Image (tube, rainbow, N blue to C red; front, side, top):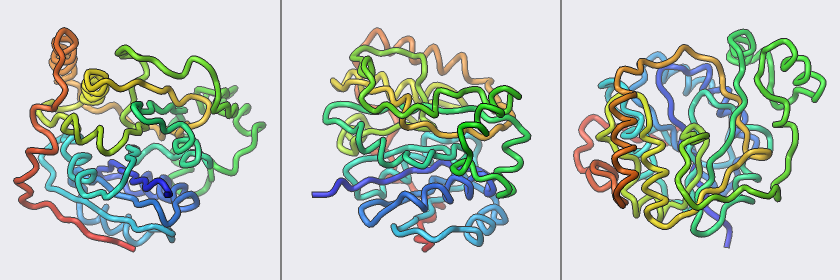
Length: 282
């Protein structure tokens, strides 16, 4: 039986970046896939720009929007993931363009009892502007192009050109903070539900992804690192406000000394969905 995969793509007021992500996904999605745009309250003109520029997909694409009440990425992701009828969830940020083999590599790395922590390549402001204008197609760049970009400082990596799905030392059993990225993260739906999803009680930017990983480890899962296969191209943006980062970090550190599995406020607490709009857009 084919693996049913749902892609949960977080976005907020950045339609041009989101469309670059969707153009890449459109070439990779098939009938056993679905896309769920987890919108953290984008303005109407941004939603309209996304809808009008939407590429053609061979799978259903849904838009899950809730009112803008500040940075609530955990809730946006939970609302979208809760709707998905899928075996496997891949979380992706709306400013992270997946490489051409992204879906195939994630599916190859999927293992029972494990989640996958993906990798990313950082792009600078100039390249980002060209990508958002659809003047550069990252999936069509050659190794020479990437070497030039690395030399000029337009990207921060070259090793992403190496695809090695069977690379050793991918799996770890204990919690390790380094490299955790909810912008490129995959987990079995049943396990995501078992830990009650992302914890929405984390306020503002920072470390709700590390908390999810910690609780998945407490749930008995292993971590698979997705380098050399699952890379996404992270478009440049100014840093989000990080006034809650230290508080959120301390919460994760405290939980490291316990065995908490379920989020305090997560999927099970989504009964109040006032203002949430769920629409299929293709």
